Amino acid sequence: MRRFFALLLVVLMLGSFATVAFANDSPVGSKEHTIDVTHEYPSGNENEPTVTAGDNDTYTLTAKEKDGYVFTGFEFDGVEGKDYEIVSKDGNTWVIKVKSDLKIRVHYRGNAPVTKPSEKPVDNKPTSPKTGDNTAVIFAMMLVAMCGVAVAAKKLSHN
Image (cartoon, rainbow, N blue to C red; front, side, top):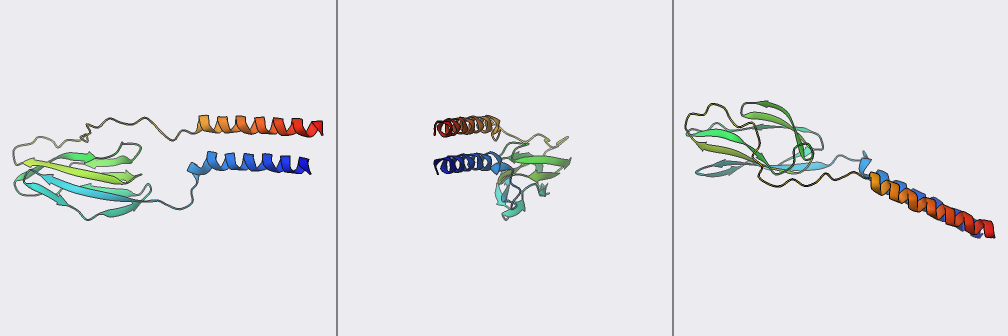
């Protein structure tokens, strides 16, 4: 009976480690992300209605043409490559792939000659380190599971 419970414990431990190790790769369900776009003019802001997009869906950003103002660039609250990817750029229209909730600001300045709109998002915030790499966690869990198996096997051999 002890042997049965020891083996059951080992199987449950291995199953729980496998579940944790592969939970992030689960394709079940598509996450919906919100996109908030604010057009920031020197005279005041205009908000677009909040929209939702599925994980990895594309979204088209277009700077509005408004008399007396010139588009100067997009600013994203997020990290390129992690929260969004730029698929294409064509002047004041960009297509992005959505990976997370986003707040996007579209910047304008008073009407003066401009040679070219900014193609680089304004981002003065520090970037966070890369997250999501579970390799070390998986190896640690495997080591703990192997120790559990060794202890269980040793106890079984003494009985």
